[in-house]
Amino acid sequence: MAGASFSDRVLAWYETHGRHDLPWQQQRTPYRVWVAEVMLQQTQVATVIPYYRRFLKSFPGVHELADAPLDAVLEHWSGLGYYSRARNLHQAARRIVSLHEGVFPGRFDDVVALPGIGRSTAGAILAQALDQRHAILDGNVKRVLCRYHAVEGWPGKAAVQKQLWAYAEQYTPVKRVADYTQAVMDLGATLCTRSAPQCACCPLQSGCAASAADQVSRFPAPRPRKQMPVRTARLLILTDTRSGRIMLEKRPPTGIWGGLWSLPEVEVDASVEQVCRQRWGLGVLGNEDCDPFRHTFSHYHFDITPCRVEVEPLANTLGDTGETIWCPSGEAVTRAMAAPVARIISQHAGA
Image (cartoon, helix red, strand yellow):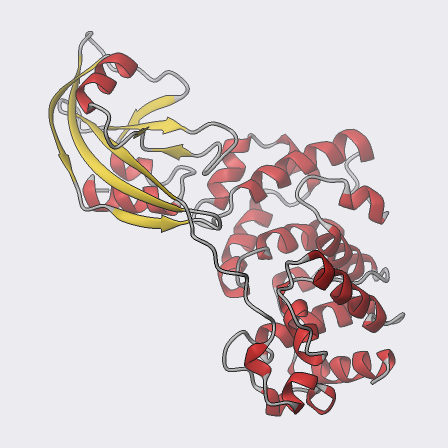
């Protein structure tokens, strides 16, 4: 099938069956599309929409985002996961202000140079917001192309990626690029899904190699399996026996949950009493491990043991230091923190 025929079929299907009322489709400015595209990395549309609306209400433009403290940005991201996206968004906004006078750049090379923006995201922003002709290759599009051409191999491999980019470039039309970009993503998200694809409804079925061979489930090939490493740690629910407040500690700016508030983390074999005395000047009146659980990141498993610890200060007062604060558990869960940490506090600290 020729490239024009591919895109024409996708666009014709989109007219009737595509999504036309997503928040970022209204007032398609580069800023609004950029925020949406970053949020949609690794996250489904239904989850993103309420976060997107709150984010745009607080940070309606590049200047408001750049001027905001990182803590405020992370609070709006809390629960959405993959927090490096929020840090990159904030850093990119500041770079746009300093290098581009607060105007989101319209050149591909300038966009892809911003933190957190790769080739596909840059193309999606410029195609949807400015109708520039750029191909995209997100997860949904990879799946469509892998099945349509029965492309062998895991799409994460460089050789397979190169082949898929060539197809993506071939099928991207000259006109109606913004609509096509949304349409081909919609096709993968709603019909050509990972499981139970609706091939009978697909406008590309007649030319789809995987469908013709009745092997749709084979494509795309899964990521090669490998043993995931396991990290273990205790997260301490330090509770001041006099006030009932708990301690939160700000995590380092990089690494997992970077820049977020969290419960203090210690090694599982560390002495809780010794750590509390040496790190925070706290005496331990009692401690108890709760049931451990596993939280899985993209590259490893994190086995967490929550630990309730009743403490009192060895000096006269408990003070905030900037990196540690004491607050009621109900207030703690409203701060910028990862969802597993908020869940621990809600379950074990009475939030």
